Length: 322
Image (spheres, one colour):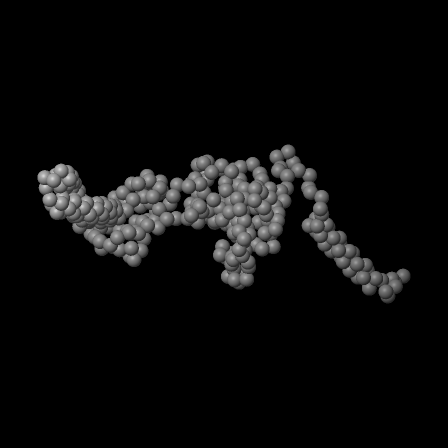
C-alpha cells in the first residue's frame, strides 16, 4: 500500500518545528544565565562578589606636585652640586653662581657700617665735652666770673653736636640695612633645597649663563606621601563622600592593588583629561576626587611613580594586595 501523498511534507514540517523549538530553548537558557539575580554557589576558595558605587580613572600624585626651581639671580653658574637621581636634604646646596661681586658688596657694606659706628662714637665724645664746657661757663656766668655770651655759645655747640649724633644714628641704621641687603643678595647667588626631596631633572652645568627667565634648572620630587587624583564622572559625584573606602588598581596589566580612602571631593567641574577616547574626553564633565592610601609608608606605595595611571573603585574594600 502506498503512503499518503501528504506524508513527506508532514515530516518536513515536524523537523522544522523541532529545530525551532531547540533553538528557542537554547536562547532562553542563555538569557536566564545572563539575567539571573541569584549568584552562583561559591566554592571553598571563592571570594564573594563585590559591588562598587562608582569607578573612575586616576593617577598617582603628591600634594603640591613636583617642584621646579630656577636661579633667583642672573649670572654664571660656578657650581652644580647634585645630579639626577640624588636624594637631597632641606637646605642642601643645589647650585651656586659666581659669588665674587656679591662678596665684595658685603665687604663694602661692612666697611660703611664700621665707619658709621666710629663716627657716632666720635660725636659722643664731642657731645660729652661740649656739655661739660657749657655747664662750666653757665656756672661762671651765674657767679659773675664769666660772660653770658660764652655760656650761650657753648650750649649752642652742644645742641649742634646732639643733632649730628641723631644724623649719625640714622646713617648707622642705613648702613646696617645695606649690609643686610648685601648679605641677602649673596644668599640669592646660591640655590638650596627647600625640603627633603629626590632630584628628578637637572638642566644646568657649570659655566652656563642663567637668569630667572631661563626656566627651571632643577625639578624636585618632595618626599611626601603619595595620593591619587581621580576624575569622578558627574553622574557619580553624589554617590562618593569623604572617608569612603576605595580600592586602587594599577593599570597596564599589573594586578597590584591598594586600599585607600577619600580625602576630599572638588567643587568645580572640569574636562576629563585621563580618558583615552577623545570624543568622551571632550564631552565628559568630571570632579576631582583626592584619595589617600591607608598604608602610605608601605614600600609598594612609596615606590609608586608620580603620574602612574590607576583605576579607583569606590565604596568597597578587599584584602590588601602588595
